[in-house]
Image (tube, rainbow, N blue to C red):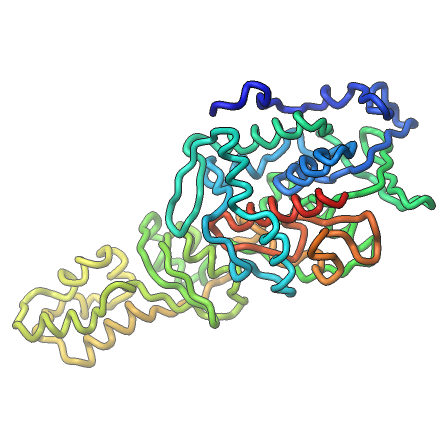
Length: 427
């Protein structure tokens, strides 16, 4: 990555925040009994928190970002297979799930994918488009994180890592007091950008929900989203040997369906189509899977029979699907029949099985592998323009901690950028 000479990337480590910033107390020599004052404290050094910090600091606000992790932006670094699917060319409110489907519209309209792309291009980060408008870094997700940290440095944002929040309270003067493992901090505006429950090994925690509850804010029920499915024991015995096979398909649950690849794994079903539908699937529901979305297999087989084809069904079907998959879904007796000897009913049975394979998952793999958390801080409690709590002025929530979850494909990062940007205009 080539950067402007005056905006070199720099990781603002714990040592960097110990300098004294002119005009206020800074963090130098801070003891557990001293108090550091800031205009804005942001809890969470992820995508939405860093974006909020940058925008708030641009307005001349004294901003501190704190995080319990030892490194900022860990989920940014691991996203997109290490290349960060940082946004999408096609962003719309319909790509998001929320109890309040209108809440995200204002933020997505005011800070768009084009605005974030302008920042990416300012830093000359090479990127490319994949299917469905998804945008990825050519080289590394680190390019995006370095860009955000460079912007933080440019605008004087301070980042304090390895910092655990122990107690939070509202003072009589309206400020917030945060008692942490690194000392006591006061601020006028507090932004909660602590994320959800997904991927706990990356440090996910319910901290943001606890803060919301402390201030009387409702939490919408949470569950894993964009997660692989596990299988019922009997299905696992049949399908686990197919691990590694990927096929294009249409997967539906309820009134929703997605067309993408399905991947068989040792544990169950994964791949983009499965991750997408998992956010809409409810326990006990059946998945309806069309394994041949581009061909009418019944018509094809009837045409072959009409011309007197002597090939076995297995041979013909293997032109479209892997043999191992065919043997898992269809009886061997069917596959060994010559198409010329198949009655209409047999061909219909084959077509129904392949175009309408129905399977009931055992569940999802849970937060361990989920890419997002569905549910969260109730959007009805916030201003969609500012992300500020309606009943607790000065308290803001951004990013995944909110009850706004996007589809796979860069939508959740765009929500992080948009919601963080909006809050940054008002903190």
